[in-house]
Image (cartoon, rainbow, N blue to C red; front, side):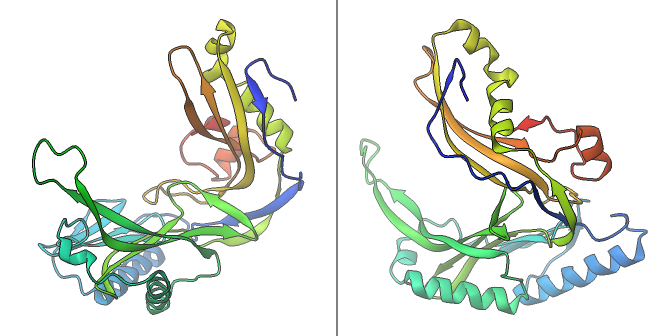
Length: 299
């Protein structure tokens, strides 16, 4: 493949032809009048608030249910199997004492898996991606340009995948954070429960990259002829939108990573998603792949 702007600096994945299709919303409607759906949300809410022992008024914001008090907050997303619990006192604290007794990486992963088991979260689509720290910095003086940084929590980060294909997007993320060995301060679980419903034909990786080459967002700088770009990675997977969105199926996509340099901008890194399903956008919308109109190439 040749392009006037982009150089190709990666190896393309093999074209697999077809991949499994996954349904992720398992009710006819998300209406409160749907008894089956309403009962599911009520049971899920009670299970989560009892396990996190979160007290307070339950606020219904439609796509979210929120329980919040001075010490903690629990957000439950009604369109997906997602939640976000936060210890509001310690999760973002700058208290140096929190860094004095952090768990080791191995202890943090062990504790995270125990919590996943307790909350009956299916780990079959999850794997540990990394273990990281959150940091805070304090300065003794306004003139101090290099404030002292210190860790305030240990975070276990999970990614999600299906049969070896990664799930991209804001709707597929799990992070469990600890202080004081095993004291939980934050639990973010953005997820949808997948059920395979047949297979879907996908375009080739060459076709996906060509759609990025031809995308209108690069048209002007190509015309100017003074810029350069490169494609650094191409991967096939699925896209999960925001956990608050009602998404009936995971969207098959190619994730195309690269960068562009222009006279005005030294370097701009991009992640673009190309819908991989070999069918029209209108068909994709009717089948519930996307509730909102999506361009073939989106970010």
